[in-house]
Amino acid sequence: MPMKPLAGVFLALACVLGISSTGCVFELAYGDPDLGVKTTSWILALAAPGTVGTLLFAIRLNKPA
Image: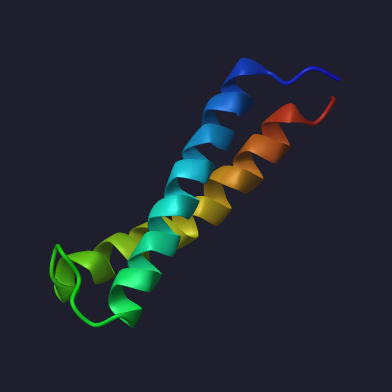
C-alpha cells in the first residue's frame, strides 16, 4: 500500500520532533545545555508529545477507508 503524501509529511515531522526530543534529553542530562536549561526544557516539553501526536496522526491518515 503506497503512502499518502500528507501522511508522509506528518511522518517526517514526527521524525524531526523525535530527534529534537532525544537531543534535549541528552543536553539536559549532561548538565550544560547550549540554549540554556529553560529553553531546552520548553523544547522538550513541546517536542515529546508532538512526536507522539504527529506519528499517530500520520498512521491514522494512511489507514485505508
